[in-house]
Amino acid sequence: MVLVLGIDGGQSSTRTVLASEGGDVLGACRTGPSNHIHEPGGLERQYRALREGMLGAFADAGLAPRRVEVACLGMTGSGHRPTVEAALDAKRIALLGDMDTGFAGAIPDLVGTVVIAGTGAVAQGRDAHGKVHRTGGWGYLAGDEGGGYDLGVRALRAVYRAFDGRGGETRLTEALLEHYRATDLRHLRELLYQPVTTRAHIAASAERVASAAAAGDAVANDLLRGAAASLADLVNGVLAGLDISAARAVAMIGGVSRAGPPLLEPFAETVRARHPAAALTSPRFDPARGALILALRTLGVEHLGPPHLERLDRPITYRDARRAHAEEGNA
Image (tube, rainbow, N blue to C red; front, side, top):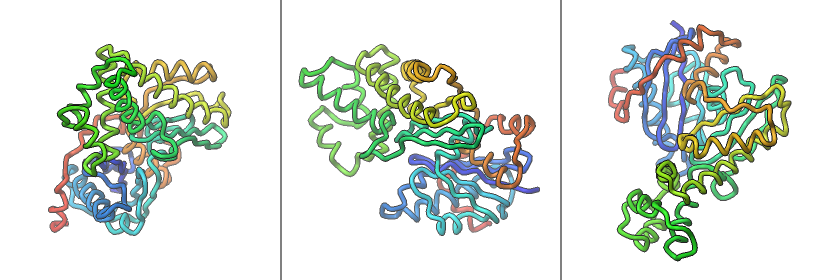
């Protein structure tokens, strides 16, 4: 049986899926983060997450680990090819960015536009002529408006404006104190400038904004509308560079997208105001299965028909295998 691996390497976790060439998912595994390779210990962390993921996926499938035909990786940040090649036993390795695998998962026929609203924000589109256009993804200093980190920073500023009397009262104050485990806003200010508070930690507070908005908090809803406008701006920039008649599908993926209607409704309205032909659609698959789709294409399966997609549609449970590297001795 010919086997392929699809890997989604993110800032909070790495997801690995093992499948047959027919699209049957055999095993899946979730391990730790595999990006930030330029930080101390980053390469070791990337190796461990990828190695654990491969071993864990084989263990979940009830198979002994062996060489796969193709491993396709979509990495947030940077993938270090020598480390990837050392961690994975594969004949061919396709090392891509998370935008590529996220796009393939959301829109398997690869015609449309996808915006990733995770820690950062980036959008990419492809039309029926094969033209590709991308906007955003410039990092937390130069861009990423509408992403989780940007939303988390704006939430912090809203809380301090409320404390100063410069902004409206908001239940985000209590929510953020709980999120950062701070006793009060002065204590929170101290924590914000300590190494313990990472960009990922700030980005994770976007969930608190979504919860406050769902509970009717006006400040939180304003923040989500602002994020929606920024994300729609990315999409509009992509669509301006494509043949919109051939790229109508627009999908959003990433943690921020889970904010639901308070974000998605103004996002859709803003996109359609400029591009009425655009149609907001739910992503078909997650990025890990998007990596599988690209692995299958690398294998030579150019046109994924209904049988492949139906098999990929089956629910996946990601086995938590953060210590799966202990199994490596049995490989």
